[in-house]
Image 1: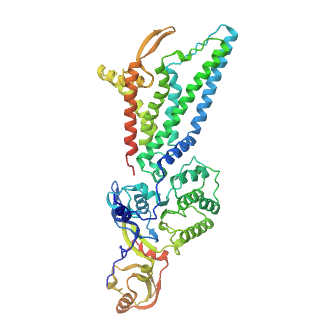
Image 2: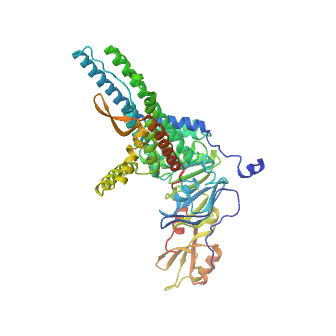
Image 3: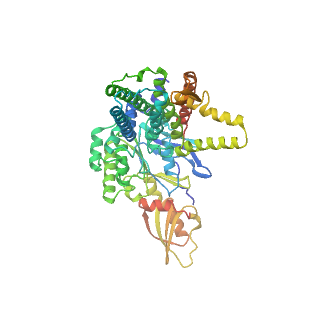
Length: 307
Length: 277
């Protein structure tokens, strides 16, 4: 029994897609043959360890970086050929907090940003500024990381773009503001038809928001699937095993994580539950419990470097 | 492109890019804000200079009531505005060296034209500073003439020397912009080029290579060198009432100035259109 992790979604309308995207920085491979598929209206969680290629992927979508090979599209627009149109349709929160003119006051920066986006919703910008408690009279350069992040979120959301590219959007925020930000994001998604590509290390925060997931590791897209497929295909099996149990060789390649306790092994396995349980049983184990995984546990399992 | 093809590739919900004239106007305003520090410094320096000149003239008049300040304007009078133009590109791209220019580049405008718009905004402010400087010279001359009772001779010089007050800062702005737009370490490049120039001069002199020395020297002080392009001087000296003075050549200036300005503009444009990751 061997079910590979899926790296392609079923056909459908895609808001963001890449095909065979590769990028090197000198000798270092940043991306290798990455084919991302983000359905329209999805909240797509892009996870991976530091240096996996998440930020590079987002920057290629904005034509900040150029791929060595492969193509990228946002709203069916080629990211390289029609970059200004792509950027007009994207709200971007970068990883770096020093994005934006540090010498400009927050209020003036929002006015500046508004000029570039004809769809800028001034009253919504004011609402966001109040919710995020922005101090419009302060210069960007003196803001804390969290304050700068809130300004950037306002800039990304206030023109109600069809696509949001959020690179660590809650990084630097205190727990209270993190909660507020996620609430604002949820409200925004309820009010505005938006596709979100979200990169974050705080996976547990977006448990309720994310409905698709892509896993990058060492620049390769290791898995890509909907939450429904993830929930259905990835389970943790608690197995009571006899002394000196040799394991279940037929599950090789599908076991993502294994935690051993005396006489019991917890296996996180990708595959149809019935098939996995049957294999474990036929190998001599007794399946005691099968549970679906939280998004965080699923992420940890999918990123497990030992597999 | 047919309407059908357009509809196939452009979802109806797409947002549009901003009108160019709005971007130009906004960049002009934004660059104006960015240059406030330089503007305050320049205004302060002019006021101080004006106060010193007027003060010393008044002092002289108290000693010699018949004193005539004889205030005139020549091409070399553009040096203060040239000096200001050295710093303007740094103000235009404040905190935005190429590796930190992602905010500018994430705007929904093509990168090359957007960079050019910003450069032109900086140049427009440089020209405004030049106008202000010329106005300052004219006002200062009028004040000096008024308090001394002498003739106002400031506007009697050759017309091209007034044009220098606009072309010289333009050239200076463009040359510095080449370094600022193209490199994260603009000062290193500027100082590096200057130091290399003098080192090469010394090396050529030490090894008795007059042709190489002359070639290099002509870049700065030759008939069509940078000095000629800036203020019309070509390294030659002529006798003046108070000793030898640098000779100006409107002919050299007229050829060198557009040559250098076009060259610098081409270099800046190439760098503006270069895609940097």
